[in-house]
Amino acid sequence: MRHYRLIKSETLDLTQDLALEFANMPASLTERDLYQKRLDYLTDTIVGGRAIAFSWARAHVLENDKIYRVNGHHSSTAAAKLNGSLPPGLRVHIDDYEVDTTLSLALLFRQFDSRMSTRKIEEISAVYQRLQTPLVDIPPKAARAAVEGIAWYLGRVVGDYMPTSDDKFNLFAEAKYHPFIQMTGRILSVKTPEFTQAVMGAMYGTYESSPEEAETFWTDVARQGGSNEETHPTKVLDAYLLAAKQEKVQKPPVMAIYRACAVAWNAYRNHRSMDKIGRYDPKKGAPELE
Image (cartoon, rainbow, N blue to C red; front, side):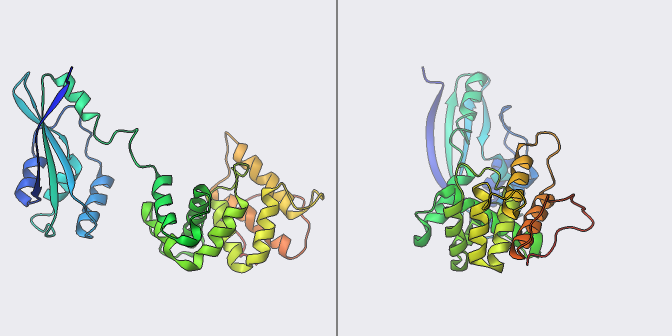
């Protein structure tokens, strides 16, 4: 049984009139509501010259003899709102379907942007990583964690402008970060779930301060402390991070996690023992990394 039939496919220039036609077309009842963040993302993609050919679809329902838009709501609306200032060269691929009933229309809609086929963020990160020859052998999960840690530290702690979303993976292309990403690959494993983004941010900050000491310090933290002494900074920090990861009700704020790493690092560099991390005071923040 065929629930829907493809009647025609064509690729056309994306004009203002075509965008308006699709944006104003009756929508399938299954279609998602407009989401402003997605509209903003698509507008930025179009204006920034990064847009590829859009894929739109409409369906003729024989049951009521009506044509509905089943894909292209956000992109046609974003293009239409540019008020005739569409960059030249944009194209759109349009598929025309025929369905017998509105129930079949719902099934057709589910084939677009299926949750099972959407690109995951780890897949996008891996693509950027593998474009860099020195990084191809690093476990993708560790490489992604390293880049996200760099972006977190530079954005949250240093206050630099950092690209967001998938754009942060452009950091893979900057050779100055490769040694840190490689170091991360030697430290992280399936046994280090406590190395969250704030921890990775702290790791990068310590690496900037002293690369060799940073690798020793974080390797020890990842292996439950580098000493049998319960007051050794790496052992105290490891215990804190594991407890924070396991906390179900009152997880510490991300800056508390970062502060814990900074406190332990500074104690380690100054050859001091410590009994505990201590309470986080948002007004005082975290100490400078030594």
